Image (tube, rainbow, N blue to C red; front, side, top):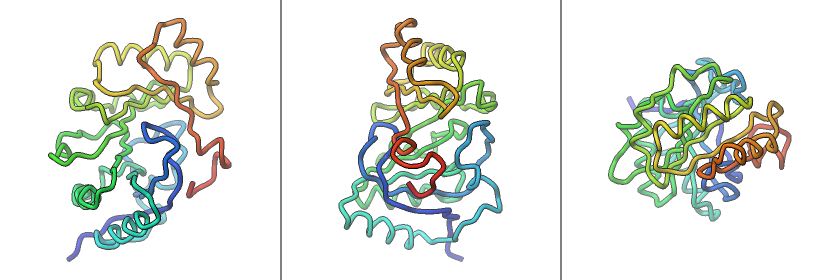
Length: 222
């Protein structure tokens, strides 16, 4: 039987965060997640019974081709946790073969080793800080596998989270850009900047979720 994937939604929008922030991207959101972060803004897509359609690899390829024909050069696999989808490596390989810059938004708990093919996607990997309630699930072995095209995203919900991000970066020294992103409504960007200055965190970048400033923060499909 042909392999299918649980696709919650797909849409074209700008990348709201990461190294491709501000660029158009096709978003493929898959259902299911193994974590339950306190601040999750896509909880509706995380449960086993989340609304979705079952799609084949060829269907996903056609969606990507349609986006490419509209000038889109990037595709973002997100969720939930996209790397939990069985045979997701086949999707990644197909998208890369199409010449699309393929980015995986992953929650930091899934080992990346099996996805490090010669033709490799870019990973935007979360490290879940204490406010998330999920820090104990982090796969810290991933840090050694990250390269310049990847990103580590520290979502901060408190001042203590920012200090923890500083300490984790110093401990594991990932060889890629490091982003601090405030939990919307929990800590202000100004507070994070003040800590960055006080703690000499020149190796970090402040990142705001652009889509939450352009559209309603709770709006889907953007």
